[in-house]
Image (cartoon, rainbow, N blue to C red; front, side, top):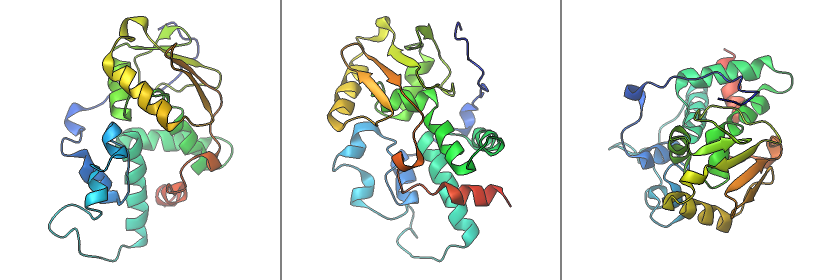
Length: 223
């Protein structure tokens, strides 16, 4: 592939394991926006703004959840935010646990450093799912070399760009404009006209949403 530090684990996805129902149900199940539907999540058409309770006939009934249930729900929520399968997520967690530092922080930094997530944050895709599709269609370059692996880990200083052949795609242009209107995280820098960006550094925990409680995932997997 021409990229020197392509040292990632390549995950093979099982198409039969994909979630085929409405993605809005996942947000309602977790009780918050997971931003799975692109621009729809930023409008008043978002399902959770209309029906902020779990889907199903018993969704509005309140039930007590055990400590294990709370930990499981948090793990599921994080998996769904980043679009990670269970097997992938366990491997990422094990890698984070082996690293120096706080396991939970390492976990989030690995998830945030995935190419599909970086492409989404830079605005080349309206959602992480669309970003994965764009990457698989050979539309993304990392440091000038084509990379079509969504799980590829981006390193600080890496430049991510849209391939020139894909620069006329309307969906990429629309996503870029919408992302620019919202603003970008402090750890990335984007050149809209050049359709490229730089991953300046890995985010600190304080830079990431406080609605994520990664310590619950650590507790769950430490049992």
